[in-house]
Image (cartoon, rainbow, N blue to C red; front, side, top):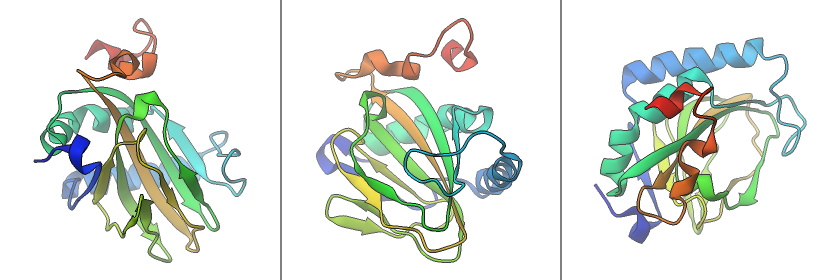
Length: 184
C-alpha cells in the first residue's frame, strides 16, 4: 500500500507472479525474434523491438489494475501498454512522460549480460525478473545509461488517476469501436 502522489516512485519486488513472468518472458522473446517492422528508430537505431498495446501486455494492463490501485492508493483508469526489447548500447534518455503516463510501472521480464539500473530522480534501482518500479511518469525524470548486455526485456503499463487532471487520457484515447480494451 502507499501514497504514490506523496512518494513519487517505489520499488515493488515480485510484481509479477511466477506464471506471469514465465509466460511473458517467452512471449516477448518470440515477439522480438519474429519482429519485422516494430523497431525503435527514435531513441536507438540498433534493432530494439518495441510493441504498443499488443494483446498480451494490454491483458497485463487490465490484470494488474487492482494491484496498481493497491500499491498507489488511487483509483485508476488504464491507458496503454508498451514493451521493448533493448539490445546492446540501447539507452533510455532522461525524460518525463506524456499525460497518459501519469502513473506508470516499469516491469523487468528478463535480461542477459549485465545489470541495467533504472534511474528516477536521485535514485537508482536494480530490478530482478518480475520486479517493477511504479512512478509518476509525468512528474519525475527517469532514464537508463547505455546498456552493455545482450538483451533486456521491459514492459511499461500506464494509468491515469480517475480523479486527476489527466483522466480524459483513459485508454490513451483509443477508438471505442475498434479497440477491445475500451470495452472494459
